Structure formats: C-alpha cells, structure tokens
Image (tube, rainbow, N blue to C red; front, side, top):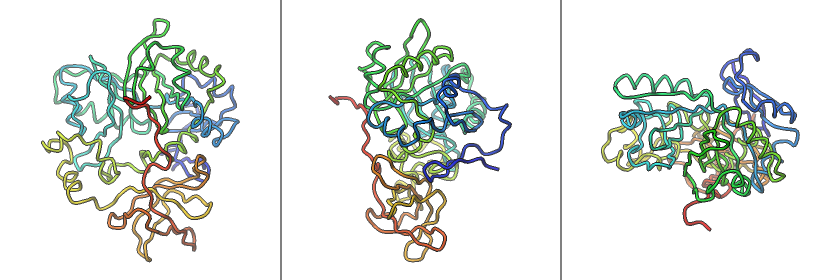
Length: 390
C-alpha cells in the first residue's frame, strides 16, 4: 500500500508501504520544522516537511527569486575509500571514475545488468575517498548492491554516514547568504566541491542542487547542521521550504525523479540522460548493460522522456495515458502546476517515433482527451553558476 499526498494537483508518492509513525527516522532539524508549522509526511521512511505555512507556491517563488532552504537529511550519504574504490564504482556505473578530478562532482547511475537504473546519484572525488549522495527511497538498495559487489575487491571500506545531516540552500541569493560563513566559497563553480570546517567541525559543501537554480548542498554533523540552519534562517533573504516546492522546482527544471522518470526498467538513454554515460566507457563497452545502451545510442530507444505542455489550466497527473491519433503511445510520469510560468507542465515517456517537438498529443482524463504539446527541456532555464560566468 502506498501513502501519498496531493501537491498542486500532482500525486507524489511518500513511501511504498505504511509505516508506524513512531518508527520514522527524524531529521536533525525537525524541531525547526515543528516550530515553523510544517506539514510533516512519511517520505521513504522519514518524517519530512512537505510544506510550511506560507504554502508551496510562495516557497517555490522565493527560491526562484531569492533563496530557499530545504532539509535533505533523508538523502543517503556514503563514503567509499580504499585502493579498489575506483574499480568498485566503475563496476556498477557507466562513469569514467578516474577522470573525476579531486573537488569535482559527477552525476551518474548505478545500473543493473540490463542497463536499467537502480538509482541516480552524485559522486564526488574527495581526494582520499569518494562521497556518494543517493536517493532516500533507494539507499538500502544501493548499499546492498555496493556491499555485494565489494566482495570481489580486497581494499575497500564503505561507510554509511548515519551521523550526518544535510540541507540545500538554493536560489540566486544563496551565494550571498552562505559566503558570510565560509571563506572562498564564491570560487566554487557548478559541480565543484569543498571540504571545510566551521567551529572546528567538518563540513562538506557542493555547488549543486535539484531546483535548476544556483545553490549549495551542505552536509555536516547533526548538531552543527541545526546551528547553521538557524543562522541561515535569520537572514531575511532565506525562506524555509518543503518537499512540495522541491518537486515543483525540479519539474520546471526538467529534472527526473526516481520512481517517476527513472526505475530499473528504464535506461539512461530512454531517460534522455545519455550525457552521463562517459565517452571512454562507451568506447570500451565495459559497463553494465553496455550492449543495450550503446544500441539505443546508435539506433534510438523504444521510449523517450519528453516535456509536455497541456492545453488549459488543468494539470495532467502521473500515469495518465497519452495518445496519438487514437493509438496509446505512452504515459505521463510527472505533472503539476509550474508556478514560475503560470501554467500546468508535465513530463512523460512516449514511443520515440512520436517524439517531435511542437507536435500535439492527447492525454485521456476520464472520457475527455486533453491536448498536449511536446516541448524541450527545461521548462524554466537553468541558472547554475558555471565556470567563466560573471
């Protein structure tokens, strides 16, 4: 049985099974959520805020125009060290791990033998180790996979960082807020990483995010995380935001969500994420599911992830069937209202032969067929702080 909550007419799953509320994991900053009248929900076994009193739309707009602070302590954090750590990661991902320079972050996938996505994740080269951030709903699966594969290697140490919490500070004014606390942070570019300290406590900072905006993800001890969060929230430019706004922001940014656009039956090519398969690995054909993925690169996948603009003001929700001239060709994978653009937006998976920008499709809602126009990603331009950007 699933527990779900409707966010701006989008059904977002918050866990695959009903769990006793007393058994839910708590964020280190949950006391702040309660104090700020958060609506808490079960998300992948965690008690997490879906929204605060200001509402999802206000939280969304605040992030686009100023700075939003998100609790992402539910995300899995894993450290892998040892001489064989690079070999381990290359055995489960399609990434050229050796090419990740110290202080850089790379988006990747843990793949199964058929090229399906067990999880998508961020891999950081910390110099002496690799630091992984994985999805909350897939952390146990990922750890099982990593530990199982690690049996084939001798010099490997795997640490699930239970004692760490994490927040994301996102938006155009995030840099102005964070640089008061950390030296030289403005020198980081998109997908850069820095291990530093605050009050003699270790802090990991990555200039990444899941909103399409410039921003940072900050990981540290639970006690310090609470203090940093309180400091950031004392800045009038910062708004406390929940999972609801995080979902609408990532949807506008055209970013996939595991369980919606990604799963173990979908390859990176079907998900329109082929950029994350390293060229050197494609040339060597030495990764899981290489035969299928390379065939899809050369000949096209059966299905493709697409952006969709519904006609009218009614959002088209997940799992709604999509048709072309009466033929069922796919389904909506995510859908809702885009506050930044003032209209409904969706993502879907459709048969690739019908993937033609600006073509019209139809979504079936009850007995009605709602026109959908295929569009390119993202719905709202990304504003990452890339190297060379003024």
